[in-house]
Length: 436
Image 1 (cartoon, rainbow, N blue to C red):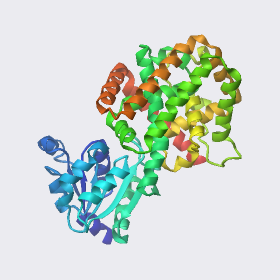
Image 2 (image 1 turned 120 degrees about the horizontal axis):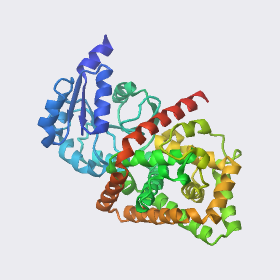
Image 3 (image 1 turned 180 degrees about the horizontal axis):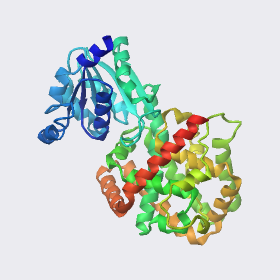
Image 4 (image 1 turned 180 degrees about the vertical axis):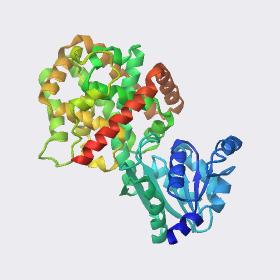
């Protein structure tokens, strides 16, 4: 009876009704919370009110109306806009409410809350480490108890229980460091793949260099990123104070390895690769849970029109550089599995798959040093990694949006198909990990 009364009486507010705002709102409704107040830009009010008139949601005009009546409020806006939105609506927050946000860069979010929220309002933030198309069950959910009494802490936890996610308690600084170590550089690795393919006017599913196994994951994940909204990645890369160091080192690793490749400096190249692999994947260094990708899984999800038997060796420069980057920065990626995103899990999984199989790794090294047919692809990848590093370093958000849009348009015919296939792959890997 007490739970029923709570779900009927507690008012939950969501400011920002994009994809993640909608995901949360309907999850709360499904769980029996009756009073869900949502808003987006005032200009969208009439449209949203008509679209969701029979949904059970209370569509309001703006964040002032949501803030005045809601006991628990989630800001679901872009990281770059959080300061301005909280400045506008924060002062209207209901007396003794509890407020949180869903942005991917928590330092800016917490600063905005501290600056603009009334002192009687508690701050209990969160971040679902996945996009809106991923099943929330068993996915990591970061909780940040910044200033929050026990009653509000318990209430927010009860509300979020409906996601069935794995809750992880972190400070906002810990959160931002981990996401910099994982998401920022991971995204750049795949953004650079898409850019290189587009610059060469090459659809990877038509090339024997990108057929089978690891290549299936590369293609699906790259297209999955370009089927999402650009600001999801731009905000994290440009606003997270820790991100630039990782992005810079990844670009440096790509370019330094490529120089060794074109000079065919085998001993130096092999030594660097083997040392990086030993650092990241050595059994004696850690006893972490492996991703354990398998051939039958990787081959099951493919867009390629090339039979696996016609596959040509690939240098896997992107994966060699990623592991080299982790080694150089003394990052153990397995330490961050507590906050893994599906895309990070896929990247770490294929890197692990490559480095734990000596035959595959030796084949990649041989191709990197001596296969001239893929040299042009690797050159374009180097240039692309440098382009993205430069965009992020200069915080050129307009260039980021433009380039992202151009590449997305180039692949548009297969983006939806790739996203569905990658979602199935993610679900399969998650199920396998659960069984370990």
